[in-house]
Structures are given as structure tokens and as C-alpha cells.
Amino acid sequence: MPREDWDDRAFTGLEAAIVFIAFIVVAAVFAYVVLGGVGMTTSQKSQETMYAALGEAGSALRPGQSVIVKLDNDQGLIEFMEFDLETATDLAVIDTGGRMTYTIATKKTLVTFPPGDPPRVTVTWRYPKDGGPLLEAGEVVTVKLMVGSVKIGRGDTFTLQMTAGGGGETAALTRNVPAGIGKNVYVELF
Image 1 (cartoon, helix red, strand yellow):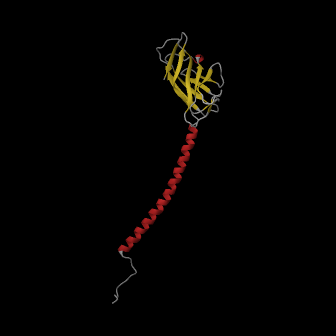
Image 2 (cartoon, rainbow, N blue to C red):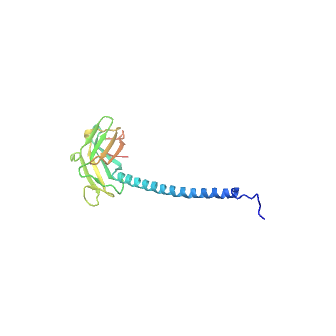
């Protein structure tokens, strides 16, 4: 027997909860798809940025840890200094064929040795691979600078900056000359 007061036009609480949960599930799936796509795009952009930075960093010089100097006069001034140069990464290729500029700064002076200054700058290949003027991964050159004119003495601090041709590749190191060393002495500065 049919009921007269039965009205099926309204939702019950259970039916409303089922519809609400369905909306939440659909929204969560949509958000996952959208954020996943954005995350992949962001990840790809950061990967491109990382490779671009590695390419730029690949053109950097790396000086050796020690600098060997010789003090050879009555005033205790450095006659010459020797140090090694190599590439910072495997991607680097640096032209050392007479295009390097060396700048020495002390508290009193700033001296720049221009590219191709044979009497004052000597570059010797320590570990060559192919014999060309390009410094590549695994190769090491030893640079000898005649710095008597700079007048770096005992107890002085100096900064040496190496700049490859074009100015893109730069490296620098700062060293202190011990105060208690004599003349005509070889000293390794760290």
C-alpha cells in the first residue's frame, strides 16, 4: 500500500555525503594532474638552468694549491713565482697561447703583465695531452712570473689574478710571504 506522505524529491544525508565525496575525489585527481604537469615543467626548467650553469662554470680556471717563490736579493724581495693552472671542470677549454693576463695586487702596487710578455711570463706544459695551446681537462701548465718589479717582500700579502683572453675565465689566489725567511731561498706558499 503506497504511502501518501512519501516525498522522494529531497536528498537524504547519506546521498549528500556520497555526492560530496565524489566531488572531492574528482578535484583531487584534477589537482594531481595539473600539479604533476607543472612539476615536470619546473623540473625540466631547473635541469636546463643547471646545465647552462655547468657550461659557464666549465670555462673557469683553477690555480694549483701552492705557489713557489724565490727571494734573491739583499732586500728580501720575490724574484719570481711559479704556480700551476688547470681547468675547473671537464667541460673547460681555455686558450693559454699568449692570451693570458696576470695581475698582482699588494697594498702598495697593482701590476698587470699583458698577454704575450715573454721576458716576464713563461708558460710550460707540465701534463700535455695533445700539444696544442688549449688547456683542456687533464692538462696542467706551470706559469713562471718574473715579479722583481712588483717589489713583494717578506711579510707582504699579495693577490694574483689570472684572466684568459676575452676576460671570461678568471681565477685568483691570495698568499702571504713569511716574514722570517732569508735571501736566495725558495719558499712554497699555501
